[in-house]
Image (cartoon, rainbow, N blue to C red; front, side, top):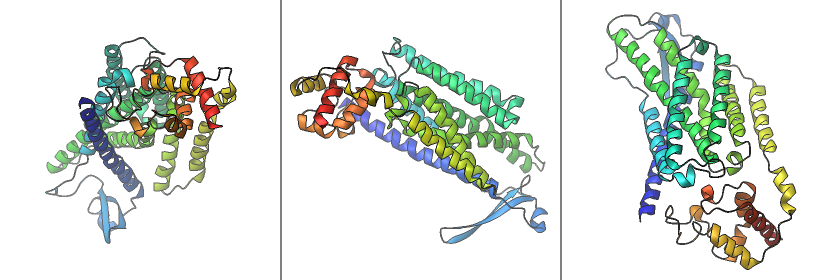
Length: 397
């Protein structure tokens, strides 16, 4: 029952994390769109201090939205703040990271083929990498480099690439991706907590006191908002990446991640330009072509060429014994593994018929991507992978 309740907790945290993330990213998309679509208002609105406005229709009604140059003449009695979307996304993500990668470190965090570090060392590396990464980013944001958008982006991307490569030397492939996502998500949430919300509080207090707020906090808050906005698509990909082992399990998975990170920012750039009235289809087309190029580059061409390898063909009985030894610890009706109360993804591999139904997926995950068994907890050898791969090919014929 303990494994069952852990899975229930996993469901609750993941569901909450996704819903909170949708709310946060949706708010980011909306407010960047809103800011980029403001039009110069008529003179009578300018006299009231309105910097820009727009009209919209949605849900059966018309909406008028105005942005003030500094603030309204009188503060409204009720003012809506947008912060808990960010905070709840980060909190639920941190709890989810703890549950999966710390409580189940042997399966999700460690990879004995890369490093011999233990669970405690890996958890320390995990926490330290996120904290130090955030400190480096925050330090850069407090330099003049942050005012040079392109060079700031290049610098952060290069540092993040080095960070990804370093983590990949010690953590499992899947954990490397998730930890980069955790680092980026931490920086994004911290942007809200340390800069955006304090800047807004300063602005509100100054206006309430009858003073015109200085532009500094607002400028810094908008910079951090833009950073968050450009990071949204890469973070969404990382959230989904554990379903696509061909990305993180690639020999250069760390480089694949960074290529997709840059491509995601470039595609987001198209939409931000479009919101400002600058329609540049070549930006979007370039991003989509780059994505397809990455997919072609990481396709398992060499593994496919080796599919007719020299491994001896084993019998059905030997293959099922191998599967029972390495796979059915999890993929059985009553898993022997304490991590699962039911077979992951519903895959049962207890009979030849069940294996035959999933033969292609088994070969992809165990022979090509090699991300199964999970964390290689059952210690499947390369020779066993080759034997299983040849048998599965023969089974498919």
